[in-house]
Length: 251
Figure (cartoon, rainbow, N blue to C red):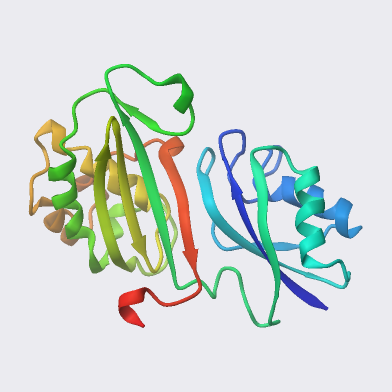
């Protein structure tokens, strides 16, 4: 038995998230359809994370156990010949039997893209959130630094979400502007359901005058979902990097 680790990328616009859904097309189901044709069996696959409807992944990993002896390089070519254009397999390699695509992850980085212009951009449809009003990226960046550290992020997960501890460590957070594109970037050891989108929605309180430096710390400490901002739309969110090594500063 071999355990293969696949690195993939996908645009989530046409999918109901990564994980298999009843009566809805998902990234995992589409991958399994291609895998079944190449490996002559519908193998189980385990992803490094879950992504919601419309969320994208610049980097995503999944592992699969198989008895087939197809070379990893040949599997990449064969799968890419079968997959739609919005999903690609970037690499494949054999890993030890105890390696786990989800539980071996040490940190993840997400980015959230905001098209900040009065007029929508049709070429970014489904790929960025359109926000019409001017954004002060420098103020948002200063506020975002309050996310960094180990905190209880109970106020930054969807109401009614059934999860265990809400304590997470955020290693880095930033907001940058390049032309009309404003990008929020955040890396941490893990994220709660909708946590990044709620972080963005809270930072978007800045142009409304409802968030200034120091406020985020109070919101985090409150642990109350009602204190944070709205959940930002899914289409601007990307799982950007997934690492199986410690965050550089913690090595």
